[in-house]
Image 1 (cartoon, rainbow, N blue to C red):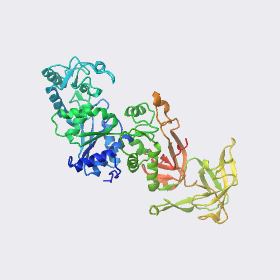
Image 2: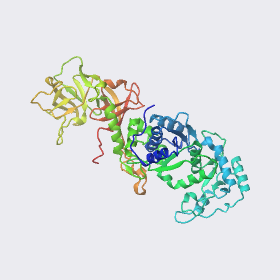
Image 3: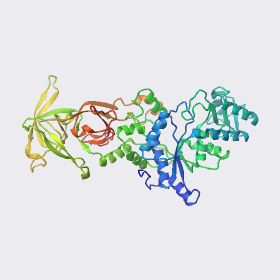
Image 4: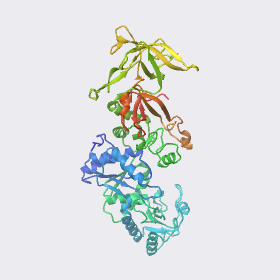
Length: 555
């Protein structure tokens, strides 16, 4: 298995674990990653995955994968499968330690019976609206339900009949009896069970019509699995007293410790699962794996590597303070990875034909190019060179701006790994658009730059006769502002209308003809690209992963 342990950079959770091990509180740490299977994982989940699995690996412990599948109305086996694939893709394995909260439904039901028998839970007939009204507000205490003092025997009878399916959805709930005047609203007799008829659960089928809530299920699942350190994000800090209350009042031997850390908030995206679901269901993106999405499936399709994402998670660190992480930090992580690992290739995204008028060779000449400028182990390749070439349209200007170092009329430029050429003539169509350049080759410049000659620019190219047609998808940030929906606006209004540009007339070097889905390359002078799964032998498709530099830095 890939070594995915987090580096030794300290944080407050590591300090807690090290102290627990040093004092003998725990001999073996057990963490867990507990996703709800109601959507695809995103980069925020990656932070939790790397933390939980990485800490277990660092300290010789174990990490469970557990699906908190208590809401079958929104869950699907598709999401179960995608989550497992994403965790494995990041480099982590759980062996036999994969669990579902539904594995514990019978035991959770028995724990609820224990609470009822202790007078700590009761069946409530208030509907959802009335339950909320009785609950009070952050500034006003709640009011006791009129059913709060039902006899234990009556509560046991009603709860068993709830399981048997005698009552309609929403007609009754099981609630904990804690404190309706607590300043912590989560302790005001929270709902533990609700009725859901006609639901086919992806694990239990139609066996249950009574489903436990997340706040009840999660702590007891942790306890049943012997979790030592239950790591969750800061929004669960106010839920911790309920977490501890549930464990303290049922017959479970383990006592996990809940520890909260800041969630990942990333610029130019949304990471609410509800909003991500809306983007998909409203066809504002092309699915969960759209390369503009912050999902791991989307990042993978865009060309991000597991190593880069793990590195990013290490860079942002673990703290108790919420903050907004710059997108540039994520982009820097993938740049640093691909700079070392991606072989170089030449691709012309906006082709402009160049005819070399003094080049008369009948057969292609072969130019040798290194696959990586700093890694000789990657070897080299031969590039065909001929009389007709393609350069990028942006590498020529009739009226160049200041400091333009590429090709201009009567100017010279070096073709990378080949000759210096001079533009002698500009050919235009009837509308005045440049459609072709006529140029001449300086044959004395191959592989060297003779003393006394200064050529300012170097551009990339491909030979026209052997170039391979390709489609290139240029992806940009999905939103045009750092915080979509800031100020209460509809986040959809902040979508970037230019987040995808599709170029269909690109020309790439013949070495790319056999590229397969998932392969990553640096297109010289353009950026890092990955072969999209839509690629077929007859139709190459590349996605832009990230540019060679942060193009948003000055925006």
